[in-house]
Image (cartoon, rainbow, N blue to C red):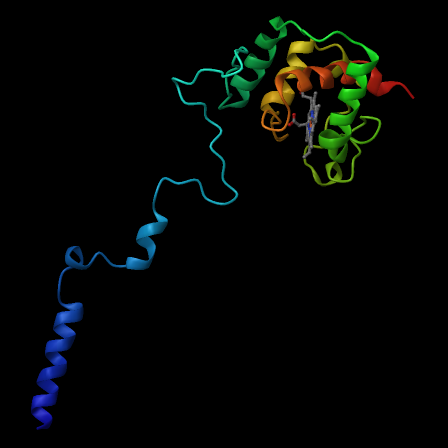
Length: 176
Ligand code: HEC
């Protein structure tokens, strides 16, 4: 009797563990995890090769390296700002600055916002000549694609809204 039980166990153990992995595909619980979906906290920043801008605006290249970022930002100098600097545009720009940028760059643009204090490197002082002397297109590019550690805002603002923000950054921001 006890011999029979021993044989049964042996058979069960052989069935469960003796069959090669290929037949079992263990571990089952991980199979669904390994798939090409975008997981929480991940983002797919690459633009598919055949994509066409739906608003008919120029589509800017998405940089993959810092070198590409710098080159693309300089190339964006050629973009012409289609939005005139009016008090209405500056008011719009101020709204978007306060909504999206102030947390890091601070109320006066000096890079001293509460979230910015956690950043290494710290947020750029936007009142510096380095920023203020940049052509509008370069600032538009930075808002659209972000910078080295700064996030991008192309999803948050329409093209026109980004140009309002550029108008605000150039000059209006640094008025007392
Ligand atoms: C989460 C923090 C954070 C937010 C929010 C943020 N920035 Fe930045 N920004 C940074 C940091 C950090 C740098 C400097 C390092 C780098 O270039 O990434 C920077 C750099 C810049 C630069 C200089 C880029 C250059 O030419 O070298 C500009 C211009 C700028 N930010 C504008 C903005 C504007 C406009 C917004 C709002 C749409 C904004 N930032 C929102 C963190 C932030």
